[in-house]
Image 1 (cartoon, rainbow, N blue to C red):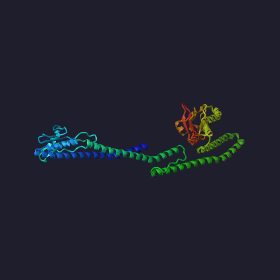
Image 2 (spheres, one colour):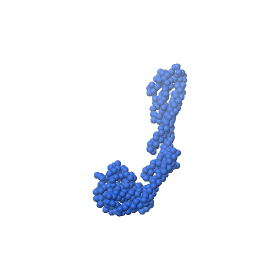
Image 3 (cartoon, rainbow, N blue to C red):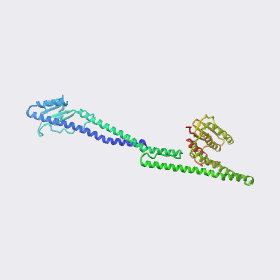
Image 4 (cartoon, rainbow, N blue to C red):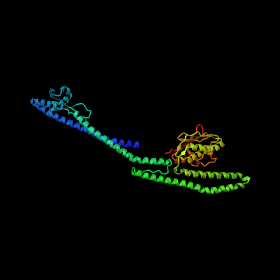
Length: 448
């Protein structure tokens, strides 16, 4: 948008400056051309008068002397002929035969006509003529070849000044365009950064409200109010989940005691119902634990010691090896080089527990590998995996694949892991494993 706005402003500036400069260039050239024509017309009138007097008296000495003096002074050739086209004056190396066309027009009493305005690059001499006589009877002709060098030099100088002024105006307009674009677009860039921060999981993202036009300032203030409202709503939701989880623990513990106390009184006919009830109680307890973990993961990360990736991998792989063997899963973890990340070892262990738990539940008989390449921690399995549409939903809260709904699980594990990473500045990415299976990449935050 910045480039487009600058392009529009600069284009308008160029057109505006050109709209002022072009008429000035044309007017300057036309005025200087007109000055040259008027001056040479005055000279022609004077020599036509001298020639008329010379033809009337028969003495052309004064005419010749004035013509030579004029040519010596201005360097411009002059030719005077009588009515019979006989040369009376020829100066500057120009002969009457060289300007025969102009002589014929003058003797026919034709007007010299308008002169096209000169340019700095004009080089052709300006030929002007005047008939000699009283207007009804032509007795001769005067032809003058006027030099345009001085006029074109003057025009070039004026054009250079106009061009310098136009260039200065363009530079000023360009600077004003940059300032204007920055003034208008800087608040928009801040708003864009704020929106991206909220999209990335930031609870409170504030933007400056003292920059840009009044409309953008009001928009920035509205954005800040919206950000505060979103943060407050998110905090209320987190507190609700945490408080509900805590409050439900006591009645859940009482329910567990009562269900356990019933075990000795269950008849054979009620054994199946009892076991189903115990399973549902276990599921409710696990769900409460996950909800509490999710609420804690949503909180801003507390300062703590950096985590040891290699130690966390070794510990959790060892802890899950027995469960993996029971599920027929080959669990491997190549030895990882020691690395410290901003995520604590406990939080990293919690994330690995989620991923290994999913692998044991949903990829029986497969192989699972936990690896670390120095930047990302990867857990890959060769189980049935998920489709692309399912992968896009996998990290959402309470989502479970249709073919997994019959198994135990709350649908909160990946959501907890992703939120925990995001709270520390990391990221979780889920992809399909070739030819089948699932790979979870954990971009762990670096220690700052």
